[in-house]
Image 1 (cartoon, rainbow, N blue to C red):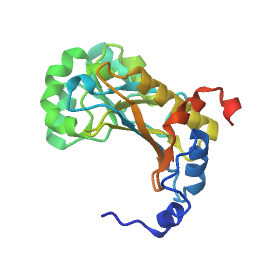
Image 2: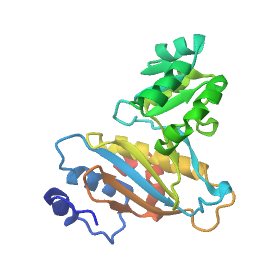
Image 3: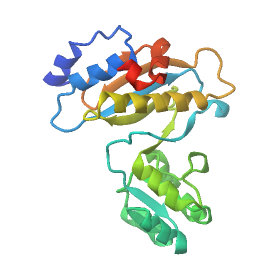
Image 4: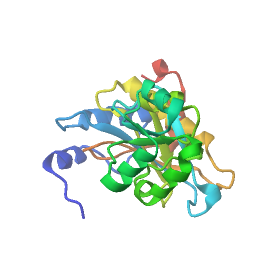
Length: 241
C-alpha cells in the first residue's frame, strides 16, 4: 500500500472523500490544496460504463484542449522527404525514417511524448511495436497519428492535443492543465473532455455511461465530481464562475 507524505495527508484531511461536488468547486479545491514546489498537473479521471474487453466498447481518440495542457510536448515524426521537412517546420522535436527506427531500436531513444508517422513508413514503425506499444507511443490511424497531414498534426499536439483511451477497467485519464491555470481555463478544458467522451460513446454501451469523475493534482488527493452536475460546465463560464 502506497504511503503518502505529510503534505498529502494534510490536504486529504480537508477533503470529504464521500462527497460529490460541482465541477467549479472541484477545481477550486484542487487549486487550493496543491502544495508542491512545482506547477502540478491537474488530472481528470472518468470511469465509463463500458467493457473494454470488448472491441466495440473501447473508447479512444484525440482532442485538442482549448486552453492547452500547460506543458511542452515533445513530438517524434517518422517521415521522409517533403513530409520530413514539413514536420521540422511545424516544430517536431525528432524527425527521421529508417534512421529514427534504428535509433529507437538500437539506442533506446524514447525522449518524446507523441509519435506521428506517414502511412508509407508504418511497415518499419510496426517493427517497434514491443517498444512503443506498452508506452502508448505507437502511431495509430484511429487517433490521427498516422497521417499525411503532418504539419497540422504536429502543430495540434504542440498546442494541446491529447490522446485518450480506456484502460482495462474502463477508466480514461487525461491532463487538463496546470494548477497555475485559472479556474475558467480548467473548466473549459474539463468541458472539452466531457463533451468529447460523450461524442465517443460506443453504441454498444448500455446503462449509465459516465459513472464517476475525479479531479486531482499531481501530488494532491482526488476530488469526486458529481456526474449529475457535469452539465453545469456546459454553460457559459461567466454564468458558472
